[in-house]
Length: 88
Image (cartoon, rainbow, N blue to C red):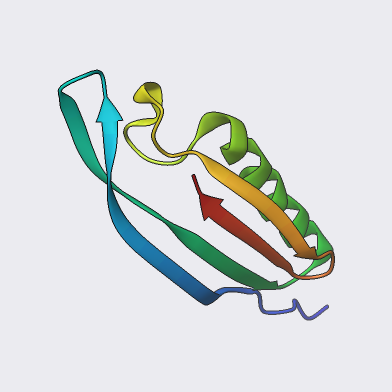
């Protein structure tokens, strides 16, 4: 049985550098933006990636999630193959 080759492609992204306020006097540099990915692979592979992205809505992405950075919004654009993640 031949396995279908899978790949994850970033079809579009936009990033903006910004400051994140922590308390009254502290700021951290971070990024806001949008990422659209396309997964070519089996339904099982898409399901696993979707599960990880859905978990990221609650856990965040990156090193500073404990102070509120790393949040994402997730939009399923096309049930078959595309999802968009927007940094908050």
